[in-house]
Structure formats: structure tokens, C-alpha cells
Length: 300
Image (cartoon, rainbow, N blue to C red; front, side, top):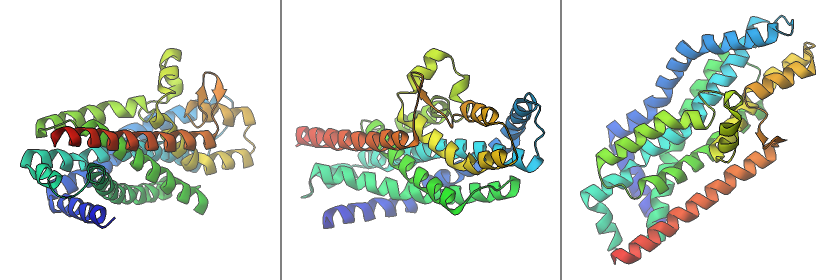
């Protein structure tokens, strides 16, 4: 345990010592928030208004703002928790380039402990960045339309924590075989460009074709996005119901923004979403540690 703590401390210090890596990780969610708020907010607002007006329902501006804010924030956090983890996890690649990984391996530390040291340090670094981003996002929601309760806020932070664990585990498995900065940058670019689409952050899964919907229903990130959607928009839907919105209208909106997810036409409960996300984290961490142990044994 002492060896693991020492590795985590060492890796975390190196991450924050590299100002370029740290500020790149920190500024990424903030840039996304500005871009989302500038370019996507009008699209989401028009979408919500047209959907509600189709049912002959008049919607207050604040309620529309809450809808737009909840969807924007859930999309941003769902993407950032994974993409920031890939950026933070580049230390593992840099240690291979500098030879520090070889020095660590010849020390009396098990390969599994080394793997967990990188994972835990990346988790701490990514959590710090994503929790700061969550705070900024909550401030944004307070400005455009606040319908959250204390329990909603706590659930949002829990969702971010689990998604960061998932993103860190996924990036650990993907980044492990990389051995150059170019490879790390290329992987980070691909993930940043593609992950938001396959997890339903950039475009709701309900708008995909039926075949694509079935494919992405197997991906854990999809359920992480839906959990964030549910918790950022729960108060909005409750307010709609209290204002007399028809239940079928509220359910239709939930379907359209992926608060309701379906696995082969069967609605997925939130408890199942948590189980899928936690199970994926456990499997990925186990796979990552196993890869390190096998690779380390061959190296020795």
C-alpha cells in the first residue's frame, strides 16, 4: 500500500508539474462550454420550442432555458470525463519515452501496483479538472434556468465520478501500448472527435437509425450520458408536470433527449444504467492490470 501511495504521489506531482498538460486538460471543458453555449444552445432551444408547440403548449422562457442548459451541461460533462482522462493519462506514454517506466519496473514494485499507480493518479487529476468543470456548468445552469435540488447536484457529481472512473480505465487500456507522443496525440484527437457522437452527447441517440441505436446500446458511455441527462433535467420535467403539461408530452421529450433509453425496445432503468457503468469500470480496470502484469513478466 505504501508503494502504491508513493507511485500515485509521484505521478500526480508530475502531471501538475507539466503546466502544458494540466492547462490543456483544464481548459478543454471550458472551451466546450463556450462553443456549446454559442453554437448549440439556439439549436436546442428551437428544437424544444418546436416540439412543445407541436402539442399546442406555451412554454416559459425560463423553462426552455432549463431544458437547454440541462442538455448542454450533460453533453459537455459526458464528453469531458472521457476526453480529459485521455489527456491526463499521457504521463504513462511519456514515462516510456523518457525511460522512467523502465526504472520503475526494475524497482521492487509489482506490475499490478505500477498499473494501479498510473490509474489512481490519472483518476485524481481528471477528477479535479472535471469537478471544476461541473462547478462552472452548474453556474451556467443557474444563469439560464435552475430547477435542480441538492440531491440532483449530488447525483450529478456521482455521475461525473463514475464517468471519470470509466474514462480513466478506458484510456489506460488504450494508451498502454502507445510509445510516442505522436501516437498519444493521434489517439486523443480521434477520441475527442468521435466519442461525443457514439455516446449520444452531440446528437441524441433517438435521432440515429435503428441499427445504430442497437449498436450504441451496448456501449457503457451511452448510459453515463443518460444518467447525466436524467439528473440535469429531472427538475425541468417535474416543473412541466406541475404546470399541467400532458404526460405523453413529457415522456416524448424524455425519449427525444435520451433520458429514456431502450435496449432492443426494452426501457432501461436507471439502476441498470449504474450497474452497466460500474461493471464496465471493473472489467476495464481488471483488463488493464492483467495487461500490465503479462507485459511486465515478458519484459523481465
